[in-house]
Structure formats: C-alpha cells, structure tokens
Amino acid sequence: MIDKVYDTASAALDGRLKDGMTIAAGGFGLCGIPEQLIIALRDSGVKELTIVSNNAGVDDWGLGLLLQTRQVRKMISSYVGENAEFERQFMNDELEIEFTPQGTLAERLRAGGAGIPGFYTRTGFGTQVAEGKEVKEFDGVQYVLERGIVADLALVKAWKADRAGNLVYRKTARNFNPLVATSGRACLAEVEEIVETGTLDPDNIHTPGIFVDRVVQTVSEKRIEQRTITERV
Image (cartoon, rainbow, N blue to C red; front, side, top):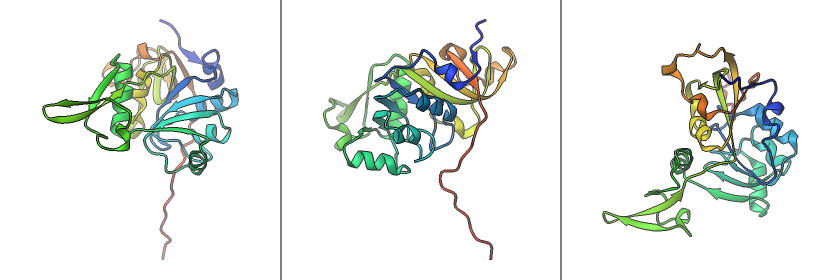
C-alpha cells in the first residue's frame, strides 16, 4: 500500500503547482477550509490562479490571503460577502468573477468528479446566470446547461485520514470537501489526525483514498467569521 503522508503543507504541494492553473478548495465560510495548504500556496508565489470555492474567505484568512497577494485571476464562487478586498478588486475590474448558485456549484463539482461534462438545471433560468448559456426545454420547462468542473488540483480539509489517503470529515466541516476532492485531477488533503491504514471503519469513510494523492497533518486554527456576543447586564 502506498504511503501518501507528507511532512509539511509545502512538501505536499511540491511539484503540483503552475501559473494559470485551476484549484478547487473545500470549505464553507471558514469551516472546513484547507487553511495551511492555502498558506503554503500563497508562499509558493504561484499566480494567475482560477479558484473554485463556495466563498472567498475573509480579508486576513483562508482564500482571502491569496487575494491580498494578487495571486488570483478568477473566482468561481457562490457567496463572497465577507471579503472587502474581493469587493474592491471586483468593483475595479481587477478580478474576474463567475458567480454560480450554491446548489449549482455543488453539482458542477460533483459532475466533474463523476466524469459528467454538463447537466441541465432550472436554477438561474431567466437571470444573468443564464446569459451566454444553452437553454433547452424539457416537458415544457426551460433549463440551463451548466458545465461540470474539473480542477487541476483539489485542496480539502478532513478530520482524520489513514496513510492510504482515506478521509473522514467531521460534522459540518464536511460541506463542499467531498465534492471538491473528486473534482480534481489531483487531490491534496490537510487533516487533523493520521491513523494507520486499516484503522478507520470502512462504513465511515467519506472520501476513499483512490481520490486522494497526498495527505499532510496540520494543527488547525479554527477562526470565527462573525463573532456576535451579548453583554451581560
């Protein structure tokens, strides 16, 4: 059995990066993001990236770090309302944006990972989302053609992995990660714990190791996007 474990995030990325590549990243807000792989990606200096992710992080964490250093050329995202730098670049035509409804984005990633080049969906018909896309009628209803997403590289965050790359996500941190993992031509996983192969219950594995090329164990820094508190009276 191949041992897929690497010592550091930068080592896991070594030989996998090139300018202009498309990278899909898991996470929802700051939950389940491959934070240390993103930092290593920033430090690599790779540029002109197309990033596929539900959101763009915040100004000083997650994918927001790549926006700060101007390494991102295009974002394919669903929600970006927590990032002022994203807004600034978008409003100044410095960043290309492909907004995609959240469910459509999830299905585009799933389709890409399943080898499905495109699918029709009712979502977005009659709106700007459908502009420039093929529309087809089924049973008297209009549907929009959406393309599956196949990324050059997928970056995901999991709770546990074994040395063969089988992954287990924890609770809501699963979010987009399983879809992202299968959408990449190569997949790198950042995890909190690595166990010996054969230790994980096969029924509890969320992403089989066949989809995962490299694994790195990191110390997670769990930040909160918006901290709301009530003063004690």
